[in-house]
Image 1: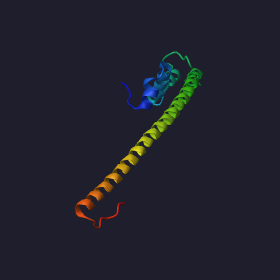
Image 2 (image 1 turned 90 degrees about the vertical axis):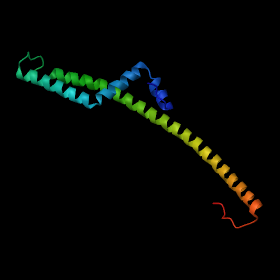
Image 3 (image 1 turned 30 degrees about the vertical axis):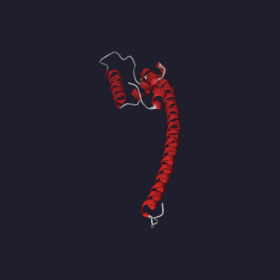
Length: 140
């Protein structure tokens, strides 16, 4: 689905496959679903190795589980940093875009104010011509 905002088009629609994969991975790692599934897997791992219904492939103190967590952390940390960098880039582009929009809006407001002042002056002149000089309130 194409994103309409220029910043989204620049960062999301034109992102490389690697960047899309990293963003998706970080989104998954930061979800409740991931935390719940990981908790269930760890509890099952520890339970299976403590109870002994299955072979003890990773007896207490669960060195293999610790290695898996370390590997997960080694990959997650750079992905989170990459995601943070992309968010900072998005924030910068959004601020630049907002500044451009604000400049255009300011120019339009100034043009409208000039037009309104000109319209007010013409209306006053027309009123004076049709009704003669009278006491009109001063323009703001």
